[in-house]
Image (cartoon, rainbow, N blue to C red; front, top):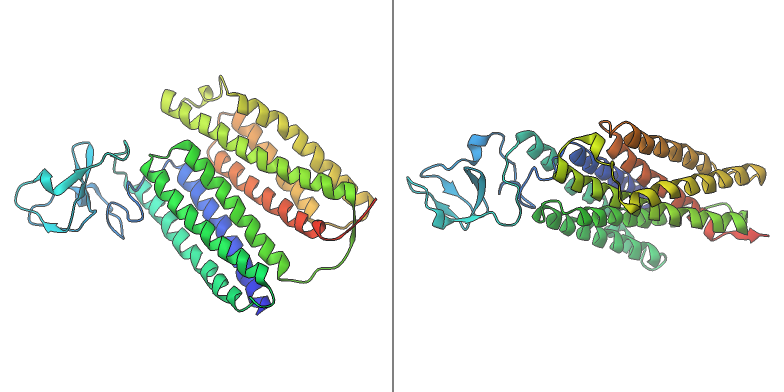
Length: 339
């Protein structure tokens, strides 16, 4: 049973990273408002494919929540009804939640597939929860972690709805991202605690610097989302003139850029210590490699005006970096230390 739990936790972790990739594609393509409502899309379980699908139709059966577009405005059906030959606005509620009133089939289906994938990705996490109940007597901490994962996914789903309702309010997107990191941490904890490990000794300095490095990474990710929030505001203010987005950056940008140097130095020190002390933590090699790619994508965005795919790749790499560091912390935090 413990082995099955471990496999399900790993599958769930992969699903979370795939969700992050899907979300990055949505943001990269500007499809975040492809569906103006949630959890349905234009009031349908399967969204429309062309503009004619959301035009008013006489003598047509509409269900509550169905969306039609009149000129440049969306209207939501108040309840189930059959339309008459002429449009009666008394049957409809005008969209007042957000300013998005544009139908783009490509954006709609990118966002819809993202939601659909997220829903299916939750299945292994539910199974993980059910399996964890059978471990309650011997491994209560795994059951508690599984419950927190489901609660976290529920919170993320609810937050996703508020993100849509707020017309992609930047600070909510930031919270959405940080929430996914917490779920990653819970799943990595579940994976680590559901398998056996060799007992080893780790220098106390290595352990404390490692913990500092992951805290710094978490701070860097938070600052990075603040920089992205600033960029989003620049897009609204000046459009897609990419070379102007960071012409007058905010304070968070300079702090984020400066701290990146410290992040690199700390992880290089860990890499050297791992070699000198013969600790054999292969994860350090992956951490340094991912960190290098993270720095390259960050510099590319700044010096080459945000080339396509660099933003979502930068985001994905930060999530992978956090996961690698957190798992290494788990491997060192409970073992014996040496001076």
